[in-house]
Structure formats: structure tokens, C-alpha cells
Image (cartoon, rainbow, N blue to C red):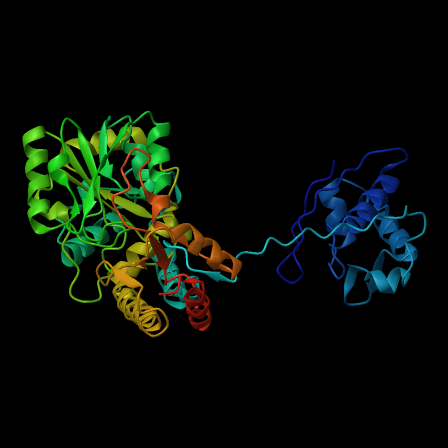
Length: 475
């Protein structure tokens, strides 16, 4: 078996695994291996091979053996050799025209895999506009982070996360969300779902109270960890926290209830903190899109009311991209060690380089600038949605506050399912409100659609709104 080679910077680099086996001597084995590498596409047309002296040294062969193998393959048309250009893989047309190579079995053309096409218009909730990712600013932060990273950053990371990111997050969350915590209270994770996996069941145990409407994926994750969830009814003031009983913790989206879109009333914010103090329980605060409030300044984090009773959980999945897989937990002091133990001795989830890049992105002000730009863009998109409905479907009401990356459209009774199906026939993907209801919760909300106005690219948004309006029931 041959070793791989790496060409010098002056040539096209190529690492190649060659199997030198079969009948005949080493020359014959090398010819077969190179011919097979070309035939299989591992050596693409135009790839420059290493000088025969270098390959002979790599393979432990005599130079003449490799030189003879090259010469044989040049004669057969597999390779080309030119003075000053070295030895390269010949193009198929230059070798064989439109016929198969001599001695080669007829090859069955590969069937082109079917292309899985998504909807023409994606108005599902939860995803930011991917075309708006700040590539240039992120790349600049990556370069600075890479240049300034200490050597130990390239070793196995600790479970708490990079100190640079925890310090930057502590400053940012204090300034913009009213969070009260230093970097020692922050543990980096890969997002909200990862945070739940760390908390349940090793740190916390059920039953866990949850809002009657929320992400089914989160409920399934909790069920898989043997955590029983108890639904809390919702009304225009958010979760009815007076329904809390013997639960040990409650999971809320207080800044912008998901998916209904309202904030938790101030009296209920105070009441749930009082419950946690009296019960010795915890409030899990999912701050999934807290930066995006359009009618006024964002509501401060619930964690600021009692840092020892509230776990604040956030991520960049809505503000930047879910592809980054970066999130954080701001923990009560008594929970930090238990969460770190649940995470393990080393960081196995979040890339240290991504963490360092986000730390620079925050500290340099690039994150603030990006959020301000996207806040204006998403506000404009929501306004366009409201305007389109006022013109084309004035009987359809947009509910919830002006915030986040989605809106809820209230539908006439009994029309939710048929509207989702009508939208699908027009190439529009969106969700009905009933799909977010807890399986043990009563149907307390009217029919509605959850419309994600952030997902489409800017140029496609107008057509998406047009198709949506065509699918809505008539007044």
C-alpha cells in the first residue's frame, strides 16, 4: 500500500491513496493503481502528478520503476508529459475521443439522483434570512480571532466555553437584555435544544410546566429524557402562571411568547419569580428572539429580576444563523457545577474558533450593527405583510406584538387546515397554529397561521406574500 504525497506549493497539491496489490511486479501494480485512480475520478483531468523522483521516494520504489510506469501510462493516453509542465492526467477527449479506453469494460452511466425540491415560498417560522448573513464582517472577526488566539485555544477546550466569549456575552447581555451575571455564570452550549439536554434529567427533574403552545421538538426532547411536561393555559397576557402547582421548574418565552406573539404581562413576570422563590424552583427563560422588538425597546430579560431563580438561555440561531450552533446559559450559581459535570470534561459541541469569532464579533460592535440592520429589515417585512393583508384580506387579523421573525394570522373558525393545504398547493410552506399545541392542552386559541416573514430572501418576499394572500379564505 502506497503512502500519500503532498506536492510543493509550486504545484497543484494532491493527496492520493494507492493500493499497490495484485499480480506482477511493483511497476505493474503502480500502473494499475494510477490507472484506476484516473478511471474512478480520484485523479481528475488536469491534475499534476509529483515528479517520479518524489513519488519513488514516497513509495519506496526505484526511480526507474516509477519513470517506466509514467511512460507506459503516457503511451496509453492516461497521462500527458510536457517539458516544463510535468506529468498530468489527460482529459478524456484527448485520450479517447468519444470511445471507451482500451480494455475498459463498458461503464453503466450513473443515474442522476433526483433533486429534492422544497417549496417555492418558505414562510415557515424560526429561520432568519440566510442571504443576509454578514459574511464580510464575520470573516474579518474570524481573521482577527485566529491571529490573536492563544496557543491553548487549539487544544481540548473546557466545558464552560472560551473565556473570551463568556466575557463578551456577559457585557453584551448586561447592556442589551438587563441580565445580571458575570462570565463565571455563563456556560456555552450549541443552542436551546442542547441546553435542555444538559439540564434534564441530570441537573433538573420533572415535572416541568410549559406553555400550552410551543415547539413540539422541545417537548419530544423532554419526553425522551423522561421529563413529564404540564401545559399552562395561555391568554392575551401570556402564560397563566397562577396555574403553577407542584412543578419544580417552568419553561417560558416571556419576551415574545412562541408562537402566539405576546409578552408575559408584568404582573405575571413578578408572580412567576415569587413562585420560584416560594417553591424553591427555577424559571427557564427562552430568550429566542429578544433583540427583535419593533414598536419599542425590547423587554428586559426576566433573569434580571432574580438571577438565582432564573436560567436565561439564548443563542444566535435567530440573530445570525442556526448553522453556527452557538448558544449560552446564564445560570444560578448553584447550578453551574452540575451543568459542567453534565457537559463533560471537554468541549464536544461548540468549535473554539467559532466561539472566538463570536467574541470578536460582539466586542467589535459588528453584532450590534447587524442586529440593528436586521431589525429594520424584519420590521419592514412585517409591515409589508400587514399592508398586503389590509389590501387583499382585510378580514384576516395579525395578532401579537410587532416583534420577532414571525406573525400569527387569525383565521375564521374551522379554516386552519384547509388554508394550510391551499397554501401548499400554491407552493407556500407555513404552519398552522394547532400544530404547536401541547397534546394534553385544551384548544384554547382560535384557528391561525404562523407566518415566518424572515425566511425568504429579499427578492422573493413579494411573490411569497402574493401566493399567501391567494391561499387565504375569503371574507
